Image 1: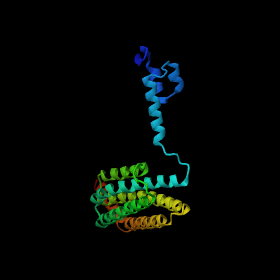
Image 2: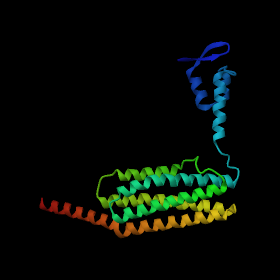
Image 3: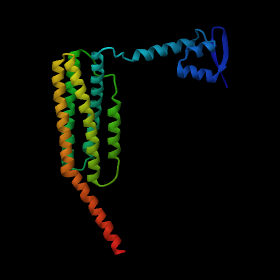
Length: 235
């Protein structure tokens, strides 16, 4: 199969495989081998290549890495603000609903602290998507769609929420350390405050899981086993 490329000298065919190689790899040798020279195709290829390289930040200093990590956290927290109301709605336990609701308010405060840090740095907080948080939230959403005993679903939601907390604890610990190294003491204090709150939330979820939800889930599981055993004996 052949395709046609328009040149100053007219229209000439080249093999489709060659064209695909050029598009996918940006291989200069393939461009030259195809005899394209300074065609519209080649100029467009150069333009796209330069744009891709320009979109990437060169991490040549701790300050740039610090900013990138802060933007990652900002993305994570804003994603969480949108996800937590669904967790509140999906939880069955009144205590768990309250815990998720409290953490939503807390997370909104975390976003404000990050905005304050970015304001002092005269930098924008947007421009990056936290893929890790996106994946964690998707896992939590899958749990919300499950069917089963309410207490068992609640236990699963707590597990999903604690995975989020552990990610945030690690991330805030990292940027707090960077802030200290860079002499950003005010930012370090704000980040430490959030880090402490994330730790408290994780502890609260653990206590809730051990003291209420998981016991109920175990009880329901035991009742189901007892019913199944009784039924088998009657046969």
